[in-house]
Length: 388
Image (cartoon, rainbow, N blue to C red; front, top):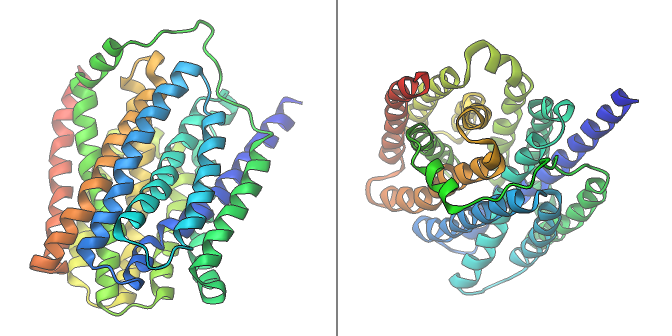
């Protein structure tokens, strides 16, 4: 009976991740092409995209505190997914609106999808052990959903336009919520713990936590540059919408082996060594991004994604769990995401967009490669702090 129940929940989480990440890719992979199509420059697109980074930071901080305070994540996800579907439908239906309107809609849509990605993983980590240990396996199907959604989005746009894409997001979100109904919420702590500002202050003054977040910020800045600046370079090289979708699909597909092997990789190398491997591979990837001048070759270089986002996310969650106190087990994860994911999403599109117009895409991408070198060097003082 226990085995059947465990398999049932794992299966439902797999379906939920697949459908959710599919519709997340519908919006996320089309923000830049959509804004480009309606006439916004690289710098203006960067300004608009920075809005959803700010929304991500606020939402993840608020959701983290609420989840620890009220010992629930499932209810927060239901509310967030409903709102994401409605906002995305409006975003891709609006025609000829002012920049401020797109700023607000992209901020809400992008902020909610990023916050949900963090909430999903924290939700699984907060469930029973038999569910928690399947996190990497479950996340693999999120990558499959993202890859399938990236390609399906182009097909939907060619058949129904961007408005049809937005309506599809809302419809599939409704189906996801039906599947979510049977899933369990996080385990409640036996004794209700009152969380104070002092608890958060101690967390944010922990040298290990702060240095880890800075390293993750630098690494995730490279991931964000891949998602915006590399796409801008592909547009500059006259890449088709299908080629841009193919890049997203390739990146998602190569993540799957990493997530499937996540447990083995952590036991074999440990979180810190995985981060170092990611630093080296990301540096090589961005040197190639700067050098390559053909959209097809840029898609080929995207296979290095196997060493970037999945490695960073898997390693970071384990390292944060080792550092943070139990009473902040949900908050510490979402605070970390809001800082290294949210802040990099806030700054990189604007900064990279500005420098791309001033010095060109190639030199900008070469400068991004230097962030990988800096991250690698910083892992050594972090190692000393963790060993103490």
